[in-house]
Structures are given as structure tokens and as C-alpha cells.
Image 1 (cartoon, one colour):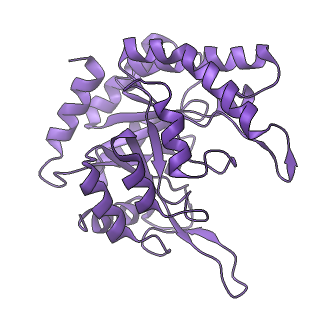
Image 2 (cartoon, helix red, strand yellow):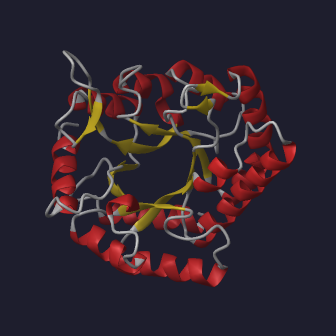
Image 3 (cartoon, helix red, strand yellow):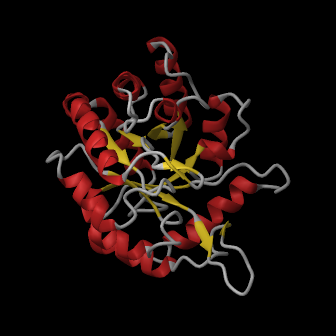
Length: 296
């Protein structure tokens, strides 16, 4: 068993008594950016989480050394925390895989290869990809077809790296005006014919143009990691907005039933930014997640 898979399995077994079906995760954006990551791991564990997602750029640089990465992995293991995912968002925002300039795309490919290597050092089994955008605000920059073609071509180059490292490459459904239905996401993932290309599903992000339970049932076992966010649909002059867990319009009972039906049993991580004015935010998020997981 690869080291990352072994670490994940051990974490899953450790938390089985409190949540036998899923791994409770959290995203590092809920912590102050200046807080040492070892302290983040300790606080996450104390609040009832067993996994964490880290971001290249915010949590460590793309050029992090192997020794430093391994020290971070050791700190997480000491706290009883698995590093479930690393986000390769910032490097790909700077070097999008659908850029017209092939040199820009090549830098994006290099960033993904580097992220795969870092994942190995961190005993992490998955990379979140937010790799393309069709435009900026109201201005279209890249068409859907050319984006599909370029994204496919560039991602294909690193699939062998991911397969050798046993690290999932997971495009996420995000507000980039691309892959806006579960059928599109499913087709995009399936064209690689690799078990190491999956998807990172976000329950809140699809609420304006779909239903999370439908996405889950359509994508099935292609889903390798999950973000939980709640979303309040607009109406009667009220703008649509993200909301605290259990305070929006996500049908959590249906979401959990769908996850059970497709057999998902991996990390579920609320993606919630830090609110310095909310006392005990981490514990509140943990308690809300427990209520949702209990619906399964």
C-alpha cells in the first residue's frame, strides 16, 4: 500500500467510532494565515476533525523543500490529522491550462507535476484543480471548446505522473463558467480513462445551476473529495449568497442519501473562510457538520 494511502487508511480507522462512514475534514482557510500549520493541525483535531485541506500559496510555496514538507507531514501525523487534499489553485490561476500561450500552459503543467511531488512528501493522496476560467467578469476570454481541448491536452500530460505517485487529480466544480453540469463533468473526467482522474465535488458551488444530490448521483464514484458549503438562493429582492452550514437551501438529507447510495466514504471538508468576529467558529462548524453527517 502506498504511504499516502496507508496514512489515509490509518486516519479513517482512528475516526471510525465517531463517524464510521466518512472522514471529517476542514479547509485551512478557516485558520489565520499567520498561524503555524502545526497549530492549525492541533486545533483542527481538538475541534473534532480528522483531516485537513492545504493550499499551495497560502499554506506553503510551490517550491517548498522536501525536508520542510516532510516536517509538515510529521506535524500533521503527530496531531492525528491526515492531509486529505492540496489545492493547486494559485499556480494555475497564474498559468491557466487554457491560456493561448503554450509557454503559459507549460508552466501550468510544471506546477501540477510539482504539486504531485509535494503531495507525496505530505502523504497526501489528492490534488484539487481549479485550472481554467472562461473569462474575467463580463468579458469572455476563452471559448468553451478551446478550453476543453487545451485543458484536456495539458492534463493528459500529467496523468502518468499521478498514476505513478498514486495521487488523484480532481477538477472541482467552481464558478469559472465551465463544466456547469454533472454530465459535462462526468464526460470530461471519463475521457482520460484513468482511475486517478476524478473530481472534487463542492455541494454549495452548484446550487445556482443545479442540485448537489443530482451531481452526486451522476458522478458516483468519480467523486474523490468533497467540499460542503451551504447556499441561500435569492428571491424577492434578496441576493443569492453562501450561508453557514444548515442555514441555506442545500437539501442536506438528500445530499447524504446520495452519498450513501454511491458508496462515498472519504473526506468531507467544509470550505469556510475565517470569520474573526465569530467566537468558536471552528467548533460551530464541527457541530454543524456532525448534524449533517448524522443524516446519513
